[in-house]
Image (cartoon, rainbow, N blue to C red):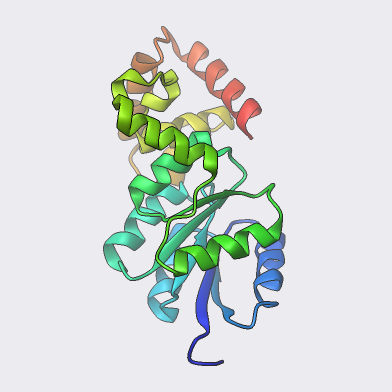
Length: 218
């Protein structure tokens, strides 16, 4: 490894996806994968051990949202740059990821060469965003956030959105609480807030809306 080689870590809960990205990154002489993880706790431990220059993080992990991991890494290891690589459309999670501390967002459906460009861009200290997202964010700055229409789901906090997603995957309150490392009471509070924000009268409507959202967004 040369002195200019950058250290990369991959965080994704699908082994085949991690292996594929590791293989692609290994083709680059200036990049080296030094660690991998499948969930938040493992990722924090490995990052502390290998101290990568950049972590590629999936939004959807086994234990909880990658957004929580991004926040934790930013707090504990502020030198580590982060790129989100996700199956979800950027309109759903990109701005949340950037607010949490990531420097870029890329959809998994894009060609693998694009993620190499994204990695190098972020390592160079610049944000990596699509033209569409850049235009959207600029429009919000110019017009003022309140004047830009948003969907009711956009009004959910990061934790509420994660709860909503897990409800849509068919998980019960206790299962969600375990996955998110929170108490069932806290999850019930999130469920109540979600129903209020989405103007849903009962639990069955919440489950239906969440299931439909997961079906439409992956």
